[in-house]
Length: 210
Image 1: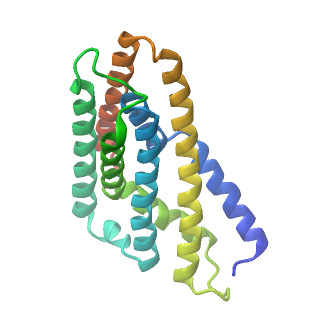
Image 2 (image 1 turned 90 degrees about the vertical axis):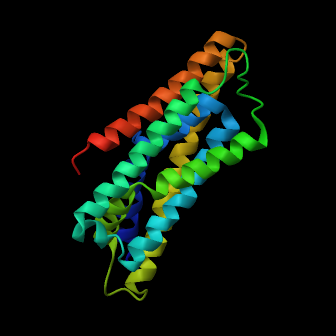
Image 3 (image 1 turned 180 degrees about the vertical axis):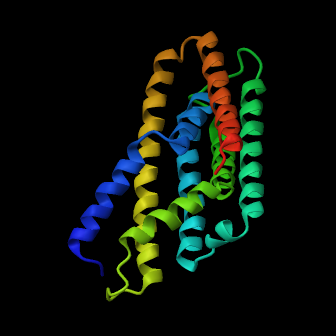
């Protein structure tokens, strides 16, 4: 196992990355704004599950493919961006006036948010690159644990930290929704704002050069 100093440095650095608002936190908050708290929490869970795909890929070294094959990175990146834009437009146009009830969207909306969020995270090559760039800084080749196991352990810890941060974003967005719940006009605006955030995230990802 790596030294205690190395582990403490890892935890501190990972916490800083996790709690600086980023695309995942904004995505979970947008799902909350558009569909309610349950969907927000299911979105955070979906992102968490999708993150394990990248953790395993990092442990297996598969993420190096994105460095070796630039067109593959670009293809996955654009697919993920297009999916986000489509989700945002669907939310923006979704329901007609008076139909939106953020506190009672039900099981179907939660399952849908979960499935969509897993897909969004799996199609995010930035996450794969992050794990491959960040985790090796804290891997100790001379430690008792093999390198692949250290990748898995650190990857799970990072993924969990990011999920906690996403949940904080969901809670804050949920508090805002709770205050506006009695106004149908405010509900429509919240749904459209959530959709607009997703479209903006998709466009931002598509236009990034790396």
